[in-house]
Image (tube, rainbow, N blue to C red; front, side, top):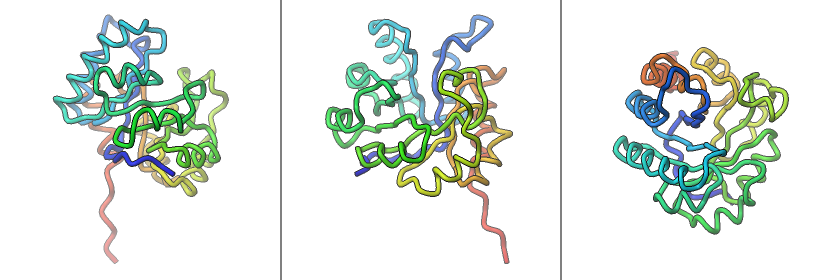
Amino acid sequence: MSGAGVVDFSLYLISDRHMLTDGRDLVETVRQALAGGVRAVQLREKDLPVAALYTLARQLRGLTREAGARLLINDRLDVALAVDADGVHLGGDSLPVAVARRLLGPDRLLGVSTHRADEILRAAEQGADFVTFGPVYATPSKLPYGAPVGPGALRQACATAPIPVFALGGVTPARVAELLEAGCTRAACIGAILTAADPAEAARTFLTALAPRPAARV
């Protein structure tokens, strides 16, 4: 059965401080993205020692709480609980989803990275609240995860998914129309916001593109 967390956001920002250039700071960049309307951030800095990750998580917890946004920690349940994050996000090498759900309890969010439709169904059965799915498009950050699955696979995945699906991998505001056409109304991104000249404006552009359209009058 799926988890009980409320997935009340359509745009999911995933951190990667290695993508920042010109001396930009991750915390400040996330602050700008939150100012632009981002309401969910995943702290994903796999190479940081746990002490440094904890310090960064505390900083982002303060920012996200102030903005009324969700903070999820990649993999590290201990860090998530230590900073009172809203949940965790699991990858392919993480704890089993059912185990993470038992440790987290019913009230925190649990996200899972998926690449196939059957993985989405399995994640939901084991207690996930939402999944990321991809890579939909080619992108350097997702090269280790294989060739892009494409909008067709995204369409099939969304058609059978019992929980929210966030398209991930090469997703930009310009591609949101294609995501919507595939039946996906949520997006996850890294570089499209983190490397933007104006992260706040990039976030606003994303959210405008994802916003529900008014029904056409007959």
